[in-house]
Image 1 (spheres, helix red, strand yellow):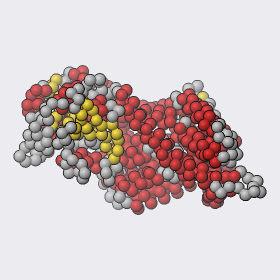
Image 2 (cartoon, one colour):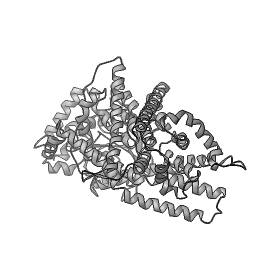
Image 3 (tube, helix red, strand yellow):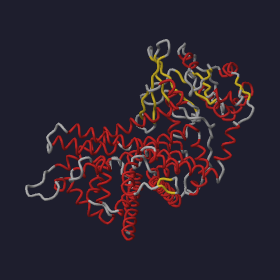
Image 4 (cartoon, one colour):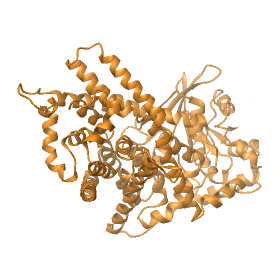
Length: 615
């Protein structure tokens, strides 16, 4: 054991408040990465006790049992046992349990105790338990389990005080374990004995949960509520973000003019900064407010306990399409980014359902598509109010998101019809109690996602923007040139060559150029368009004028075709790489890329031809 830093692992069932407790202890002193060799997220943090003692905290993936049925549970089991390669066993295991649902959580507590390692049991959500009239004899529970038991309220300031005081003392002795592993029947019997001896519950479920679930889980009203929530979110993405976007846009335009004002016009450095960096990155940064609004609502729905209910509600519909309700949360996560959405499929036990969910996750409208959608919608769809309430642009965005959802269900239905094994599996899912999302956890989640987005902007997007500027600048035009310089560059030549392929779907050569770096990250396409048009003789302030430029130079049919393309096209190499890692199959990568590109081309072709005929 380390002499200076005690290594603590937090374990527990999903929805026990474990991550909220981790945030309470570590605050901003945390980092998110993946376990070596697998795309399973790991969160590490540090905190210092009042005594000055330092602790390293590891938030392990949620698990229901050490009899692992998913990669998440396997990681938690192996780390706790000290079996994970390059990962020493933790000095102390803190098992977090929901005090309002000990009937479910105590079973895993018994498994953790069976490891025979130092264990502390943290009874979390004690405030909710008291409000429901649940009385827990903590001393008796501690005596019967043979491990220290503390009470915590992870969402309250100071709610982890008892846990900090306990871990700041002497490390507990190894937990007592039974001579032979307990059978499931024996564990259930022990849980019943513990509950009878230590817990008094007026009712098994909270009255407020039952009242809300009568509406949220109603087969008709529940679907209406869910559809209303989704529609409201997409309205908010457009309406709430515009003032902030305008401010960012003005700031980037001013910064670009100030930064390049000292440089001689026409110089390579002036062109790099003005046409490359500011025209490219600026065109992406302005969409950060919309992305954060989308993330905000996803985090709120997750923290409130609503998402598992939405999964349960949609199970019947998704079952008909060849998915299960468990696929809902990974697919919803894919609205933010397909990569964590694909990684979240590890909670799906059936390998067939998991593979199907992985294959359709890229069809969800991820936040990287949002810059393209909002650019084109703002340029071609008037900001008209429909019905006195609804923003027409928000309605179009909702339709695009729904198109992705409908396409995913259609593809899943086809996969279901093609697979040989037709057997099905029932959905068994815990519905956690409703709770008010805590502002600190929401803020930390938004901060993490902001850093990820800004790292992409400052890393891959910046690199690709500079590369595109180089390709668009060299070689220079000949002495008798009559066209803009970019037409004679490498990028111009590539764009004109690709134009032969994409002309039937209405794409001009500038769009073709933007599609190439967009293969690395979808949002790069907007930055690329900014760079291409800045170097094609467009306005100097491309960040603020790009929408105006394309609205003047593109037809409505071309804009609609490009929107249709982005509903389907897998323009993200990282997503394909994660499919390879999660399925361990290049064949699945080829199938995913092939069918997505095929659907994208067919959808764009049909959209362009129909729109052209009607215009």
